[in-house]
Length: 428
Image (cartoon, rainbow, N blue to C red):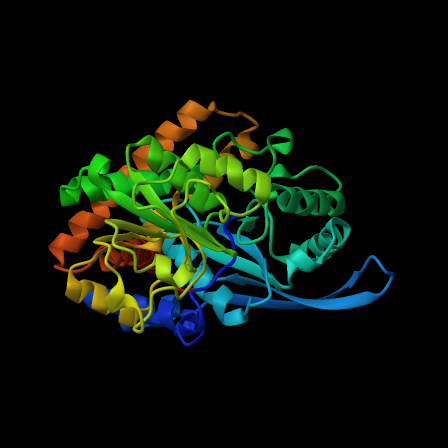
């Protein structure tokens, strides 16, 4: 599972439409770059949005119709790339926003991909394993018009995992008549998955957090960290940051959070979570806290690793952290961004901070295409090098334009996509 499903309460529900947020962020970067008006129109909209309503046979024999989406924002720099999420709040605008962010995320790390995203409106906790398989295979068949190794490569996201990807790969392969492992990434190792992929997003978060601390003069051994969301990304981030000497003092999941200002024993907490399925009840916690309260703790570093719109105009002024590393997609609204900037809070944006997952997904795709696989140490070295280079390029651009790291990342990404679009021209 890419991350646990949670929100910061009623305030999150009032936050901006995610697609409007994505467009506003693009508009800011386009203005800084003085981008050609025609290119602005092209890059501001998604290229293709596909809605499917499909039947699924339930365990009791009844038929239920689900709605799913697959959106491709841009294909100029290569095949579309992006995850698939299962969640009751999935909407077309959310998927459109996520597809746009994927375009910029791939461009920031200079991967030869465009951006895509998919989702199905459902509550997977209310479905049996067989019902999830039926839903996944039918959804995969419906979007098979779009996906494939040379056109659009899905990956896991919220409430989807390796098993989900295995079902999709098998469905597409059965329809083709031969195995097509490169049609998805994030698969099990036994069918063409990559070493290092499950931990890739969290590892990328750790790398950029270290780089940000170096630039800020913050000693990891003296830094406290709070992490909202303790699914795959949040838990791996906690484990790796703990290993680098950071003091993780608070974490939360869908059931709530825990806090100990003296620091949490992360290895013991991970074992507790594996045993109980939640972080609450951990013996090493001093107190239990809500997800919204976690965001306002007196810590040096805050890592949102859940869903969009966690920081809004309602709570940004109460955030005490000096560094926010966006492990989640779109956790900060533009209004909150402005407040953070005015208060001197450094934000490492999502399109950089959580790009480790798509980077190792790219490695997996390359390995599948050539049927030659790398060792985990090589993958981690390549990932670290790419993430460090991207951070330095983003930071340098932000300083050059006297702007935030988010706008530095957007300027880097938008210019790469705009240059590719301009040189290819408009067909016909």
